[in-house]
Image (cartoon, rainbow over all chains, first blue to last red; front, side, top):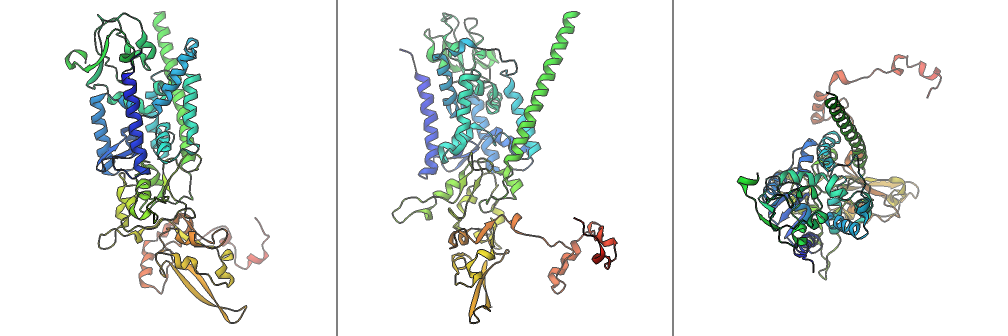
Length: 268
Length: 276
């Protein structure tokens, strides 16, 4: 029996948060209102997406204080828990791309992995910077105009309309196009959170002595370049691209992986 | 030596490729965004900044729409929630995605005294300051969401039929829309009751458009930018002392009264070949 602890915890968190956002509109709950762009926690604490805020600012207009404070709070939070914890624990697109990835494994599409010459994992950082430049040129938050993340979130809260097509497009791209194509190569929001979470405290730690080199973790990991230490060294996964999803911990049969507090002296 | 040359060549090629592809992406992305923000005939919530600025500052969070639909006054008698005024633009709406707007014929703005949509805005894209009256209190009558325009040919009041639906529906009764009484020469014994909109008072809430009885409303709300002209500072009302002060604003060097036609004598006008 495979261990699904973190997978189920993540799904519960993702769906739970989406339901709170949905209920804010549908039933007038004041627990978590708004969308990722800007939210209100308990009708009081402002939260805002730092990358969206940065785009809006680079387009040349000053924003309200609530958004600026909210973006700061989010940055501080993810600096501690690992920036890309947003990607695997909060973002609804993660459920779409995880499904595509799971189907890829079931249909054995990965065997036919092609070398995508143009599409590298670092592409997302280019897109992130490009998003700010385009925002400055066009005068609107450029990624927000096309972001499948908030399109999906607003779809859940206010109704999808034709917006569902971009969600399907990402599913198809990840399933038949590039493995981990959206989250692992293109998404500029994930890139921003990678940078925010560079030095985060909560990290996956590898125990080299217990590892039997079965490679299950590398098969399941959506960012498996971060697991370079497997069966080599007993250190933490310090790469900001790790989403702290915990799937590697779930699939490990040898207790060689687990969440821990980063050893600031040794691992930095 | 040779391998370092190859390395340099490879580095140059990859750099060039990355820069080129980034430029390609940037062009496509900018092009899309520029088209996506071109949705001129859209009505925004009260207090919205000028459209160009609004499109950027609005963080697309939907707090305004949530406040609108969940306000206390938006309940039916049996306690069930009614549809809200504000919609969030989604794919297929042909508006910048995620921005709030409303369609008066579906749900007009009911002009809540406490303006819940604007108060909740975290980015100040809905600017509270523009909704304060002289006593620094929130005043929804300061809102300028749009301007109602009457199409005379389809308005039955202009035909001589008696209808004052828009006049009665207006929350600023007898201020934003007044009735102009004129004699109906066709019958010789009836009066026209003609609705006239006053742009300095009209908030653009759309209640008139919703109330209009014609098949397609003869009174409808347009964004002020599109519904209004501007005389310019070199036309002033000489009989109005206050208005005459505007003459001081005009920039003389920007006024161009000479064009190709004005170089000819007025008498030539009739002799001239018509050119288009």
